[in-house]
Length: 266
Image 1 (cartoon, helix red, strand yellow):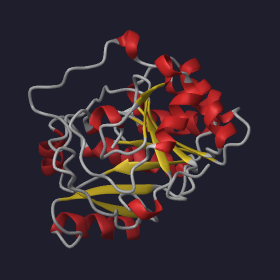
Image 2 (cartoon, rainbow, N blue to C red):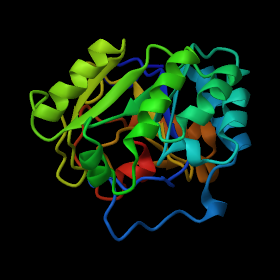
Image 3 (cartoon, one colour):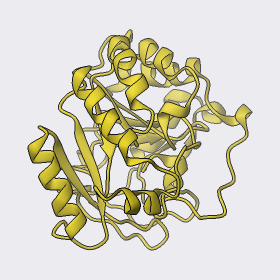
Image 4 (cartoon, rainbow, N blue to C red):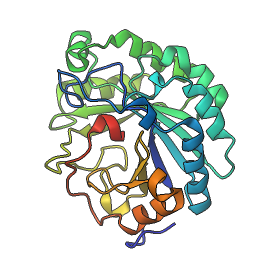
């Protein structure tokens, strides 16, 4: 399906939960967050229906995000349900990797194609400081489990403050080169001010060639991360929500004052 700027939209990013087992400084405030009530979170059946309608309209790539998608109870079952939808070419997931050692093989068996894993530093103390809770050894174990389960190519998402030439980023790049991993450098973004840039090694932030829509955990289809526009699949119906998101997808991102990375799926 084409938007009004003739961009082919074939990619749906789905936030399956706003919950997370980390508290990364650039994503969540120290005091915590206000979570969606459980009854507002889309059920697996609802998510599958949104995907089926999207596939009929031209979606062929799905990415599961969060929060942290692996804390959603039954996530392997959801992947299995999605993998049965005919017309999808790729099912991927972005995860912090903390639980991936346990889930990698079951996810692969259920039909997941590959994963992106967040890793901003190789320094254990600094990783714990950034994430407030994280154990970097669990991430390394998750990376190895993903490779063993053939969730490849395994891509590493590394958030940088200013440049991919920062010391932590250079160490992550070296680690990836030595371990047959692909690395993407994501410059720290700010939804409120509209600060974003094109991902190094990826396509995110490239408004001219944007091919994606987003589904929030509570059922809003968003045409753009850096926009307050959203269309409720429950209130409007799935097809109408898609059409409105497509028709109103902006030429480029501006700002987002109503959402947060942890509940949109950054």
